[in-house]
Amino acid sequence: MKQLFGAMAICLLLVSNSFACEVCGCAAGSVYSGILPRFNKNFVGARYFYRSFKTQHITTDNSELYTKEYYHTWDLYARFYPHKRVQIFASLPINHNRQYDNGALVSTTGIGDIQLWANYAAIQTSDSSLSKIKHLLLLGGGLKMATGESNYYRNGNLLNPNLQLGSGSWDLLFNYMYTMRIKGWGMQADGYAKITTTNPAGFKFGNRFSQAFRGFYWYQKNKVALLTHINAQYEFAFKDKTLGETLIESGGHTLSAGAGLDLYLGRFILGVQAQQPVYHKQAENLITPNTRILGQFTVLF
Amino acid sequence: MKKVLLFSILTSFLLVQSCKEKEETPTATITFISPAEHTHFMAGDEINIKATIEASTAIHGWNLFIIHGSDQSILFEKDSHEHAQNINIDESWSVPSPITSGAIYVKLEAIINHDGDKVDKSLELHIH
Image (cartoon, rainbow over all chains, first blue to last red; front, side, top):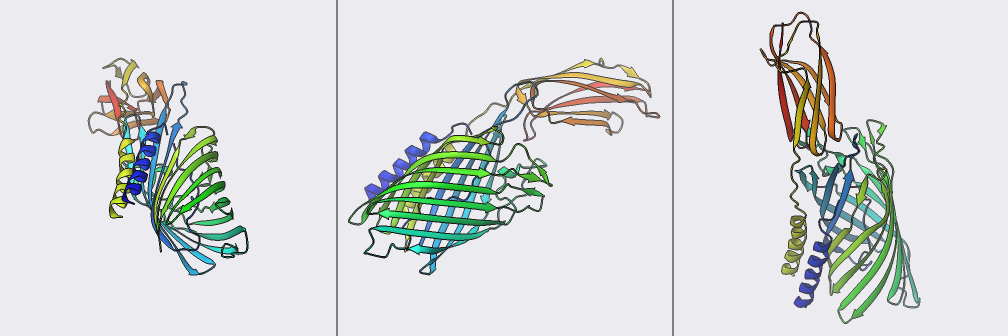
């Protein structure tokens, strides 16, 4: 058992390093979920989420000026069932944001914006032993709180809103998740919306929407199970506004494809996933997103 | 299990460390074209400041100040968030009347990045 854990951890290390330090940009992420483990169980866990971007700055003499942004998030998250059809989620992110700009490194570290949301199982046939096709439809909504620092100054200058630890705004979250499973095979469609509000500094991140389709295969032997999955995800962000003025160089959309592997060992889950943008137009093509990596460690109870 | 959790944290920490890249800070050369150093001006004269900034890569802009030598007061201030590798500055300022005679300094700063790194050069002039 220990060897298996060790192998997975080494895998995570290798995958992580292979994607690290590619060119990089700006956090425009939507709510992330992915395939959540064992829908009928409570869990607590920790996720690590890595994104990087390369941002081009327009120059007046056609010379090149780029900055690179790296976003690391360690997310403590939990799911509880107060009722058999109701799930409550909580997420406490700890962010570490870095921007490289002409030899200077600007970084911020600290607690991000806490998210709380609830899902209602509108359709749930997974408990039925008669049905070969199992369905689960979750509908939910929640709140992203303004708990992360959004007024971070450095050398007298207010940092770019994308480098702040939080957005400074209280935002509404909506989501749905439909999962269909036939024996070990399954598919999932999930969509998320973040309806943003203006923060105290007058900045409003654009509303964000995300739609993902995932396919997975579940293989189990005794107490050990493997969940392999592939996904395609489309994200759209409206343009940001500052003091009511639309920021032209913001917003956009990204289509990504990815794959991942989760290892279930009894009540413990270790997972890794990578996602590569295959088509994107962010901030009028000034921002190039790179590979994202997600690692998770979850304990069911 | 604690070892696994510790290893996972260590792994993500290593990823953060692996992303710490070392980037050279660009250099910039400021050249004043006009006026010539120690030129004398009278109250009411217009001072036309022409200068160039040539950087090793594109920079984030420039600040221009005219500072009175007697009390370090700022007589004129202009900034530009112009991203470029080669920048031409052409600004004018009329010497107000009356004004305390003495040395004034034209200070031009090339803004290398948004973290406070700058290259500056000053030019001494005299007003009467």
